[in-house]
Structures are given as C-alpha cells and as structure tokens.
Length: 107
Ligand SMILES: N=c1c2ncn([C@@H]3O[C@H](COP(=O)(O)OP(=O)(O)OP(=O)(O)O)[C@@H](O)[C@H]3O)c2ncn1[C@@H]1O[C@H](COP(=O)(O)O)[C@@H](O)[C@H]1O
Image (spheres, rainbow, N blue to C red):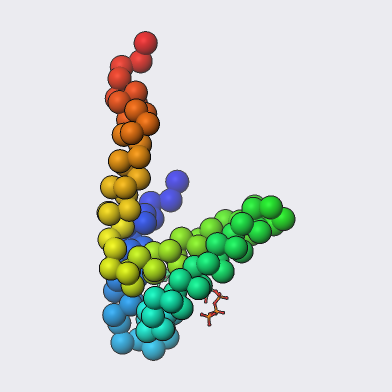
C-alpha cells in the first residue's frame, strides 16, 4: 500500500501554486484562475468516466490520478482545505450509522 496521502498532495500543491518556478504546472493552472482550473477538472472527469467504461485498468488508474490532482488544485484555488471535505464525508458516514457499527465489538 502506498504511503502517499491526499494531505501530502495538498501540501505539495500549496507549495507549488505559490512557487516562482515557471516550469510548475500547478503554478500555471492557478495563474489561469478558477474557471480554467474547473474546466480542466471537468475534462479529467469525463476522461476518467470514459476510461472506466472503455479503457483498461492502467488507463483508469492514470486518469483517476489526473482527476484527483485537478480536484485538489481546484480546492486550493477556491481556498477550501481538504480537511473541510473530509469532515463533510465523515458527517455522511455518521448519518448512515456505519461509524457506530464499526466501533461495536463483534458478535
Ligand atoms: N499529480 C500531479 C499531476 N497529475 C497530472 N498533472 C499534469 O496535468 C496535466 C494534464 O494533462 P493535459 O494533457 O490535460 O494537460 P496539458 O494539455 O499539458 O495542459 P493544458 O495546457 O491543457 O493545461 C499534465 O500536464 C500532467 O503533467 C500533474 N501535475 C502535477 N502533479 C503533482 O503536483 C506536483 C507539482 O507539480 P508542478 O507544479 O508541475 O511542479 C508534482 O510533483 C505532482 O505531485
């Protein structure tokens, strides 16, 4: 299992978005603004969906990585910390009751 986390990616994107390295793709995306970043995210979403239906496993993994990267860039540009999204996901889990079930001792 990879030890690379979304938090790691969030930190890298935050650093690269404000770097003065002209080769940085993240910096280039951020400079173009939220509408451009959102358009790229949408394209990656479509490419990922297509890969799921007509692509192979390797293609789906690659497109999924592109999609997650572009989502993290959009969150950075929008000023939304990953933690806020994770809290939203967690609140949904609590509402389903699965969290309580997971912490109950096995029968
Ligand atoms: N995970 C990624 C990542 N995934 C995808 N991409 C880039 O996203 C782009 C998407 O492909 P496209 O063909 O749509 O892009 P393009 O046509 O070249 O670009 P556009 O002109 O359309 O914007 C590619 O250029 C990929 O290199 C990424 N670029 C960066 N990262 C991460 O961000 C870090 C910082 O990158 P830099 O900002 O480039 O230093 C890297 O170390 C990685 O961890």
